[in-house]
Image (tube, rainbow, N blue to C red; front, side):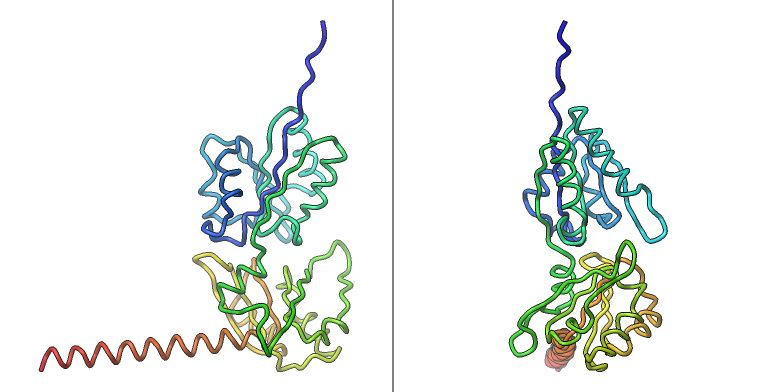
Amino acid sequence: MKTKLIQPGVVTLVGSGPGDPDLLTVKAARAIQQATLIVFDNLVSEEIRALFPDTATQFYVGKAKGNHCLTQDEINQLLIDYAKSGVDVCRVKGGDAFVFGRGGEEMLLLAKKGIHVEVIPGITAASGCSTYANIPLTHRGLAQGCTFITAHADKELTANWSALATLNQTLVIYMGLSKTEMISDSLIHHGMDSNTPVALIENGCTRKQRVFTGRLVELTQLKNQNQIQSPALIVIGEVVTVANQMHWLEQLSERSSSTDAAQQQMKLSA
């Protein structure tokens, strides 16, 4: 009697964006709603987790600093085991799976094991969080380009600080909260103006979002004074001044609205 071969399941790498469920693509939302098994990361927001169907089996495999639920090798093996048993896997990651999300590693490994992989892109944190903070990544007269780097490395961070300090572009740093002093010192040492505007965006694109702006030389002080916690994004460059202008304009608009309302009330009372 012949043994029936099991057809491997499909693994779908879903970029869930930076936090706001309204920023999910239609394709990502459909993949999540149709999922029977969801494997999700730490950076998938609570609001997006709330959209997971009750009928789906859920596996949390988050990795936070000093607290890894599973190693990357264990996550890889989990995906392989379920797919080889014939189960379709919805692998949900924060932001975009191909931007510091190790999605490329998972895709290649699964493909080597003969498992079909589909990838659904998501809005990466640099774009989503900066936009929600009124900081354009590029702006005429201020920045004609932007560079994304991660301050997280398996061993030693080997960024080309000399190049980064002189690019005259917007610099967005992922996972840099624990290295703010090294980041600011390295950039200033290699020629970046210590007064270059910076922003720290905590819990971007969620109801808990907080944004603090200052100067490069104040980066660590800004973090400590405001007790910034992960996840947080660092934006460095003149484009941060746009957010400061927007804040001033919003305050001006609020004051104008309050004055108009008061004048209207006076007319009604006369």
